Image 1 (cartoon, rainbow, N blue to C red):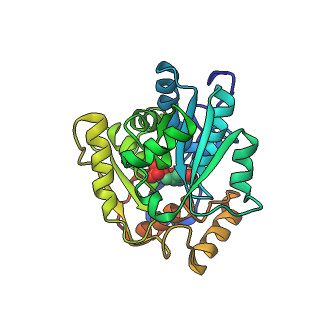
Image 2 (image 1 turned 90 degrees about the horizontal axis):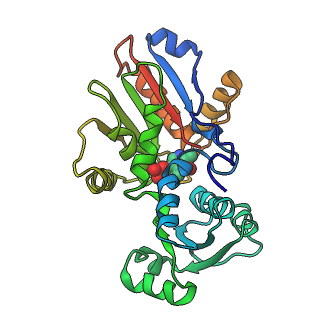
Length: 292
Ligand SMILES: *Cc1c(COP(=O)(O)O)cnc(C)c1O
């Protein structure tokens, strides 16, 4: 199977939001619909995997191994990618096994992924050589993809999203979990363009370091055209608030698009708050990446 056979919808659609709040502020927001790329290999997960799958194939790997929480979109995407591209897959899940499996893990299993669990303490050390060695002992040789899929090869994949945008813009926004998407997007911007990431985690100042480290590993430099907004986490990862839920419901009614409350809802909510506060001069065109 190749990417062509999968009928990926690339370039992903770019659609302008028609919303009074934007007209009043004199700004434009274009949605980059990466959620429509593929029903299973959605959004930024596909972009981050693309060059990792090529590298895995080139080095002759037969198995992909990766890490994630029990509700991880990345685990789903790796399971699907393995199924479609002919790799075995192993998902190393944080915490204990719960039966019956939740929808994410049941899906991953249906796609052929073998699951194993690490207690939270060991999970924190998952990048350490002793943990990897133990996993190799158990599962044999594998191509390792880090949690969230954010590594050096994720950067060029996410950069391609920027090259697909055919309209002029000044600002591009995305949610930030591990930071690979933001690092890749910022790497592809031209002079006069900047990226704003909206962290979905509480206490996420470390993300500045992570995004910079990813850029420097992939590009040999850190670009100075991105920032991370850290105040729109609504309590932290996978937490929500009445305000966020109300915003998502209203947005769905106006635009017939259901944002998720973990990632894209927090970004669009944050973006609208910043627009309300007149953080962007009238005439600004922004792209908001619907990452999944
Ligand atoms: C995983 C995910 C993100 C986070 O992307 P990072 O590159 O880890 O920052 C954002 N949006 C959606 C929909 C996701 O599934």
